[in-house]
Image (cartoon, rainbow, N blue to C red):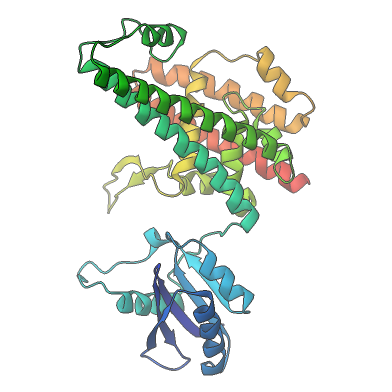
Length: 368
């Protein structure tokens, strides 16, 4: 029953929070603005309790402010939900956007039941997720540093003669380069130093992630996922920390849709139009699944390293991983033989891999 509930929309920013409160039986909301500070949020919680004769339910959009506001209100015994911004209904003719209007809109849509809540992580889950994302940022920084160095050399007519850069032969080639002008040599050495520093950052973060993966509650699910071909510790930790509770997806298709790996569709009457994948939801999980999907272009088989990763793991997890490898390797080969572009093939494999990952995590979680 939604009658008798006070609905509150919050438009949260770094400095301020716009509040719109819809009391039971009232068509127009009460509106005001507060500072985005813990003391002001506590006063807001007390005011909502005083002004409302019944239950109070608040909501705000997920964004750069994270889940701090929700945790502060929950600590004051005020129900607060974080909603998905991309799923908020939008009026095509509404071209005026202000903080006050956004708060009012959230309160009205919240009362109508048209908002979709996101699953908030706990503080421990968020800290582990941030560690994975920090490592991902460091890898991006390394790619930028390498790009700067290679383009600096290309501008001077120096290009690596080998096929693939950043291997042992490429490193020896870089060590052989010397510039006559001191300024050019200083730039070259500085770019190399930046790459070395980022490499050390990534190495340190890998060690911390490996240590965290051996601790509860990550030890078991990471072990199950490492049974899969193409999934090792870093990828497994990314999947576990970003999904933080696969039990909320009751089917594999739900998780595929959450990850944006399903085709978009614009159908009407007797016309059916399907396009590329929606790319909705969590892009971090989608990226690592696509990277893992490339491993299935090879023939199925269990090598020494994969066999070692599977040692001591449950038979159910190994069986699911074996089924995934047999099916996905065969499907990768068949789609390629039919002339499908490799980019489309690998996305199709990533979508099915997401289903196998869901099966491993979901069934093992229920068995525990």
